[in-house]
Image 1 (tube, helix red, strand yellow):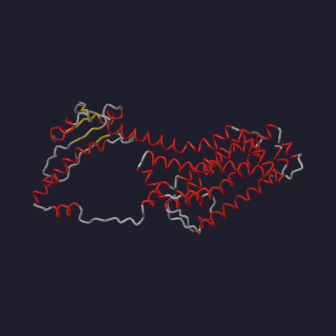
Image 2 (cartoon, one colour):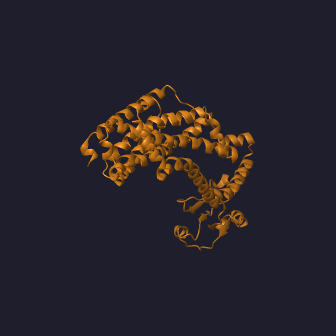
Length: 398
């Protein structure tokens, strides 16, 4: 078995494509992915905030002060004359305007007499824009002034004004610490990326060690050797497992290293806050939980590779496996699904839930027994099936 492992692992290390999947992707994907996402989100937000908005105001005569405020902010707003009978929706959809503000003729500062005013804002709110926020900044100034004038007329002091605006206030005291909050937000997405990377890291060697051997005609040579077939399977299985484990180790290490680089070198406040909450023990436990998960992946991938007639067919089967892996992670992200009761024993979903709990700092370490046991049992069962599969001539020589 170890002879087969040594042979296959040496060949694995000579394959550039496999090295890229095992090392390149985990090491570079996380920073690249989050860096690109952060860049585009920041760029889009800045563009939406600083873009000059083309607008039209209907009913200008009823609120000359508001019209003047928009005119004064000419570096942020550009007025467009649209006439009286314009189709607002059409003008906005063909990008002639960004918004239309309609002011009613009853508009005045005496809100005690006239009641609440309703200004209609027409805009295209389907994309990322900050039209509502930027318009509200100007309108809120007048809203506050009208409110202050009404309070003066009613002769209310500051305490009475506050009580009138909000008679009852709920003061929220969150018993969850910052780590729990961030863990709940980010911990659910973490297994999604880690599982996919581990699966990708094991896919290339798995396809080559089964279907690849068939195509090259070297499988027959192995089968006529005096070695027991189960040892051949275990040798190949351990090789695929090792590739997946290396990918898992590099993935978890990459998260820790890039997190430290960003938090220390670039002083990104968000990353500093998150990394200060997570200890090295948490990263070690995440890696250890991935070992039986990788064993499950390796057994399934090797079975598919042995069954496939060609390398291309094996890749086709393995590509479909990604959806199977995503499903348990999606279950773990659903509201109300927690690492309690029966969920402790559900393979893959329990690992995804445990990763979230580790990030939150609320991990029940007794649950690790159920997690390791259930995942290990599934892995052993799949390895046994793989050995059974390999002993069938009609499967090997389809």
